[in-house]
Length: 238
Ligand SMILES: [Zn+2]
Image 1: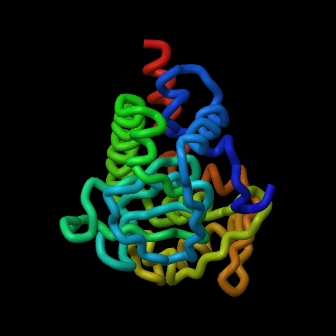
Image 2 (image 1 turned 120 degrees about the vertical axis):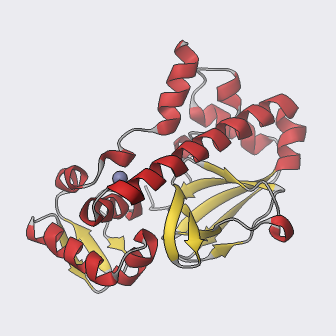
């Protein structure tokens, strides 16, 4: 699979199968693509995305992060499979800035298209669910920022930024410092420790992951639970 190849199975917060419970995700995505025009966008790392309440963004690769200040501290992150949208457009938006983290691929769908193609109820259910998942993810991120050590958080972010297993992570220590909201020297210390444990190899803005299970163990447990999946299972078997 190409790093950001279109992957139908990567859409997890989808609308249609949610409404019809156990349908597989790719059926949901196929239905979504049938409802009307969608646009695939590629963003470079650090690209700022203007708020737009008219669209829904489905992350296919990379991730979208909300930064407390431009280029400082990612307070919420949506990785592959997540749905992201704004409640207000540019003029009325004063929340954290949305930015691509790593090379990012997003499928853009107009809310209007969803309303027409999926119907009001299915669209509402989908967006409510996506909003709830985003809220939980932001809460977890806040707890992570507040309580987890720099080394564990660095490991967590390296895992998030790896395009796929076996591929190196393209990220500088400066960028990691921005994302984590810590000093570059702290990132350097964390990376050194991870390197001494034989987990990483660093070379010119590329971080090779030598021991993926080891790096997973070094990371805090924040990303080990799939919030959406847990949610879905609860709802299905309630
Ligand atoms: Zn954490």
